[in-house]
Image 1 (cartoon, one colour):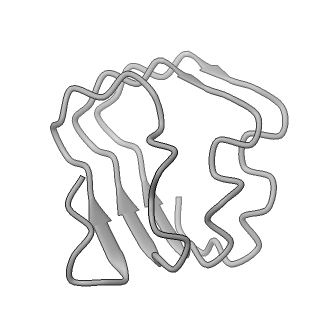
Image 2: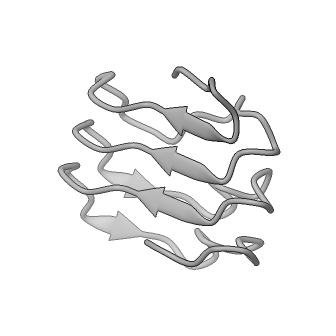
Length: 78
């Protein structure tokens, strides 16, 4: 993912099958569009408390586990 200029991370069209875990904690916008993510696991975004915008469109998501969005206290747009 390209995470500059901060506070935005662009992970668009990277062929990702899961949520990246080593992202800067300070990001506000995470673009995960056009990937191959099928499942979102509990705590997938636990290290991103400042995240305000999460874009997941054009993935293959069929399962969202309980607790997947836990700790996203600043999230305004999904």
